[in-house]
Image (cartoon, rainbow, N blue to C red; front, side, top):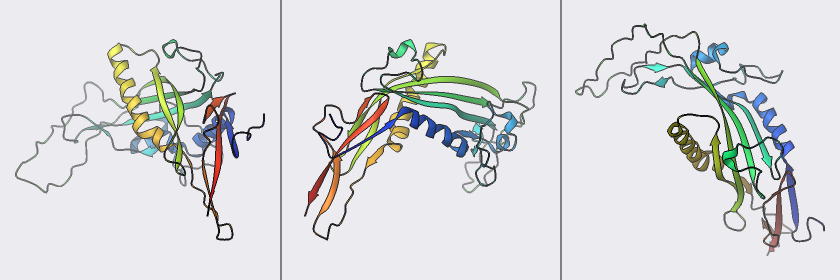
Length: 268
């Protein structure tokens, strides 16, 4: 059976292609995957993991680290902060039936039909000061002064970051969302697991936060549009693309691929 027997257009992408692209992006645009304070950016030896970049990528035209403000210490009115880094050091996707990486027992392997899995290794570190370091007294804000000049935070110097790395696994599926002519492929999370964190309350809290981050921020931003493509045909007709409804699964996740079946509509 031809792929277009039940649709007008067919497209697919293999997991190997996505993983190869992801690897290239991490080396071409490392700042998308590495974050830290200006002090860490100026001293990259402090990072938890060295950044692998392509030979033609320099740190002037394409910074390796996205610079963030110091991590504020709660209760100090932002006047004391800490150097830190956050890195995504590994990122890979696996389509059903699943062979790129094994899933942890908590996600009920093997990978289910019409599902994808994502593995990410994340590392983070905080520049904690020595225990015997004298921390300056925090000035209390004057409630009568409304236009006080902002005071830069005190950031204790550090010779190293206290680092940790975690493996995160996500299992999900993909749905077609939106009205005909303006549809998008949107990933949905069915399960998330961070491996080997104790106690359970800490693990559950982190998983809850990351699950909300994926659902509300990351996955909506990486949704793939099936655009309304309008062509003038002698000024007589337009062509609109929409997802086919005559195939059992659309989009389909199978044979290590993400497949999409598209119909064309013609209107005067």
